[in-house]
Length: 293
Image 1 (tube, rainbow, N blue to C red):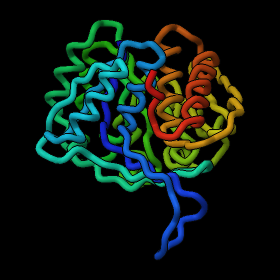
Image 2 (image 1 turned 90 degrees about the horizontal axis):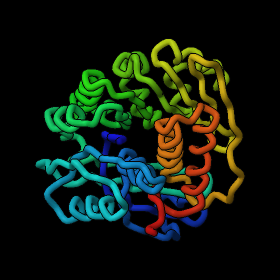
Image 3 (image 1 turned 30 degrees about the vertical axis):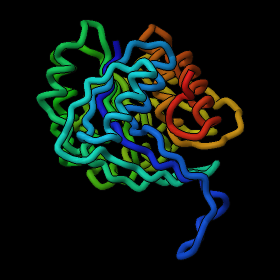
């Protein structure tokens, strides 16, 4: 059993054709779909065949009900609390090389610490908690993120944390974030997040610095592959070469593939390869979730 604590929002996906023209019109294909780092990771975990529960918050509105229904249809168990705010929304401006997100986190900021504690404390022994970094990066949801880590430690769950996003990491400060996640079994970050948390350097140098705070560190490098630093040494794997249609959710899919393998006993290199495989699947489609089966 893997518990994912994080956000569940509506993504407005704007696949623009060519550069955005400020102050004028830019042709695009626009779609509405479920999103949120925590929810996306849970969806990919279910796609990979893992038993997974998402702990999140949505509003008492049609988007919130739709987002929960989509996840449940994909095999995700939802421990989703109804909050007194609208379900969050994210406008995702995406092209083949990069994506930019404009966020209204809405009900996600009201993730309830008592609710999170109750769900994590009831998890089966031998389970795993995966915490999206977003709850920690915003003051409203931070108590819930910290409650998840505390409850997991009390329950004896293994813990992974995704660093989430470079800009809000920079705003809260590397030292604060690393203090919050100190002792976690695994920290996942991309190249930009590693720069914020560990300062400049090669991925290996950054991972070694971060390994003083957590047991294992994974630095994702997109097309450059990924690196794992842990007590047994360093593992690196190259990225799979696939045509990139949309990078949205690639990191979430990577995390899901890696966790599905690692929580089943795979070694770091095999876990990285599993992450790369699911990440490659994600970038080959538009949106942050697996295609319905």
